[in-house]
Each structure stands twice: as C-alpha cells, then as structure tokens.
Amino acid sequence: MSSITLPVRQRGRQSAQASARYQDQLEAFAAAILQIRSRLDFEVSSRGWCYVLEAEAGLLKSDFDQAQEIINECRKRGILPLDICAIDEARSFSNLEVIDDDTPEDYVESVRSSVHWMVDRYTPLSFWDGQAFFVQMVVEKIDLKSLFASICGRYCIPLANAKGWSDLHLRADMMRRFQEHEREGRQGVLLYCGDHDPAGLRISASLRANMAELSGAIGGWSPERIIVDRFGLNSDFIGQHNLSWIDNLKTGSGKDLADPRHKDHKQPYVQNYLREFGARKVEANALVTRPEAGRALCKKAVCQYIDADADTHYSERLEPFRAEARRIFEGGAA
Image 1 (cartoon, rainbow, N blue to C red):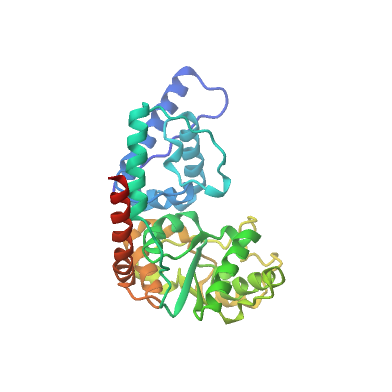
Image 2: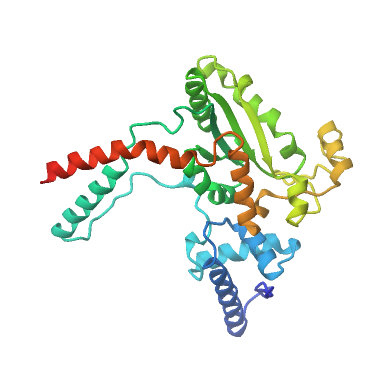
C-alpha cells in the first residue's frame, strides 16, 4: 500500500513560497488520484474516492471530510478533471446546443454508421417475456449505481440512486412499471443495496410505505404484493471483505443516533442495532474498495429471480428479427 499525504494550507495570509508549496502538494495529490483512476472501470463520487484512498493509500477515516474538500478544490482549480467524480444526472442541464464540426461528407458518413448501429439494436421483444419476476433496483449511493450498471444493463433491470428516497417521480415511475408487469402476471421484486446502519437495516418496511403513499396517484395500485429484497450491505459481507467501519451513527442531518439526546435514540430499531453492532456503521460507498466482490453480490441477488444466462437467451431470441431488419435495410440501401 502506498501512502498519501493530504495537502495542508497554512492559516492566515499566504506567502508566495507557501502558496507555491501548497500548489505542489495539490498537484502531487491529484497525480495519485489520476494514477488510481487509470485502473478503475467505474465512476466514483467524491465520498467514494475517500474509500478508494483509504484502501489504496491508508487515508484515515478522520481525514475523509478534508479529503473530499481537497478533491473538489483540485477540480475547481483544474488540477483534476471535473468528471473525476461521478455526475449526478438529475442535476444536469438539458436542451444544450450541439455544433457539428464535421465536413458535410464526414457528417453523412457518421449518419450512415449510426443507422447501421440502430438496425442492429432493433428490439421488438421484451426481455421480460416468459419471466416469472420483474426486477427493479435502487441503491443508496451514486457509487453503487455506477458499480452495478453493467450487471443491471445485462438483465434490463431499471436502476436508480434513491438519494434518500425523496423524489416522487422516481417512486411513481417505478410503481407504474411494477403495476404494468403485475398485470402481465409477473411478481414484482425491488432489490435494494444501501448503508449498514439502523435506518438501512429497516429499509424494507420504509420502501414499501413510501410507495404506498403514492397509491392514490397510481390508480390505487398497492405495493403490498411486491418482494422487497435488501441484499446489502450486511454484516457477514462486511466481515468477509474487511470493509471499514465508521465510529458513529450520524445521519444526513449531522445528528448522531447514538446520542441519547437524539429524538430517535430510544426507538427499538436503534437500540437493537446498538446492542448488536455498537455505535458504528458502514457506508455503502465502501463497496468501491471491493468492486469485484460488490458486483458478485449484485449478480447473486439478481440471479435469485432471473436465470444467469437469461441475457444470452434474450439475444438469441432477438437475432432473427435483427437479421431481417438488416436484410431489409441493406436491400433498401442497394
């Protein structure tokens, strides 16, 4: 394991020498980040980078907040690319202008290539035809969405970052899909992966309740029949893969459930957690330090409801239709 030193800015007015020294430290820190990034095949949030640096370079939990600030400072200064951290698509702009810099000939050729690609993507059949279950997945952190994207893509599983489960549109869209597939005779399954903390371990009940709040807006559809399967993080996985614990139970509000003054401290779900695990937790972001194990965990959860080779069978079912589309296209092009 290599070591990493967080840049330290002197307090007060900075001399030219101190500013130059701090800039050098930032650039060395950024170089370490970029070297690690070259080995990753998924995107990581600023918090996720803290876990990566903990595993790769011994960053201390007590330095996580400072490391996040430094990463963002490097991005602002242009020392690190802005997209070194995963992008929250919900906060991105739409209707952006796109200017073509190709020649007319090159542009037309790219259009032809795109059309060929579109023909090969012809999809007249649903992946879910013949399936007993219809599966959707929500995760607690954007790092997990990035990490699980390839597996969910293989099996056509809608995947979202719940981000606290507050967005009504996210819930409503998911409920409408469950409703549609339920009408077609499939059992709905909601897979969830999130933090190992008091709230995270009781998420099944709250996920169902949060959907039920919108039943009136979704034609009276009720989520009571769906399977809610929380597949991680769990203590056995944490122990097996030596994921690191945080020694507090602070929530998004910054208050600590382990503090007797917290309004929910005496709630059974908190007290039960404290008795079993103590005043500590594991954030779901920690999975970025064990990407292969994390993906295996995801696939195992998925394959409880979908055959592992279902994606191959789906491609085989689609191929005759795509071959016919190619034949028609090539005949028309001739």
